[in-house]
Image 1: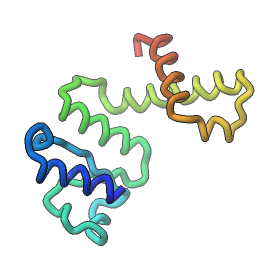
Image 2 (image 1 turned 180 degrees about the vertical axis):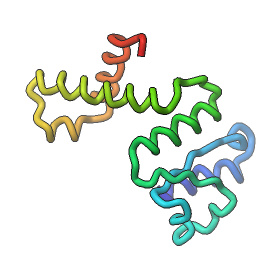
Image 3 (image 1 turned 180 degrees about the horizontal axis):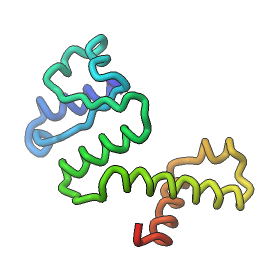
Image 4 (image 1 turned 30 degrees about the vertical axis):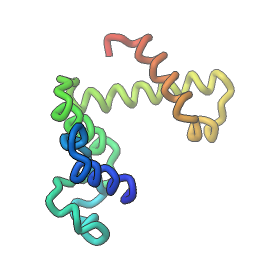
Amino acid sequence: MPFELGLDIGCQSFKGGRWQGKKCLILEVERYRYQAAISDLSNSDIASHKANPATLVFEVRNWLDAQAGLHAPGPTKVWANFNDFMAWNYDKLKERHYSDQDIERLPVPDLIKCIKHWCAANPWK
């Protein structure tokens, strides 16, 4: 991901205009591990997820909420909804004779369709 991050920071720093306010969330397993490879990020606030999916959801949810003013449900609720969706989606795909490997390798457009279907069926979530 260093290449894409470099493009993002380059656009923000040198392009100006609408790119000047560009924001990015940088996540790493360990808090300061990035310093070994990318010293230019020393002025950035790097969030650490500690290889824990619930912590990752917490960091991403809080960053998106702060940046976009979403007033999203709390991180625990987002994590619970994610787990509900994953269980529901697994069962639905199994009903359609998907193997575990098929489910693990589900293309993103198909996953997005599943998410939309689940959200439509669970508007209270």
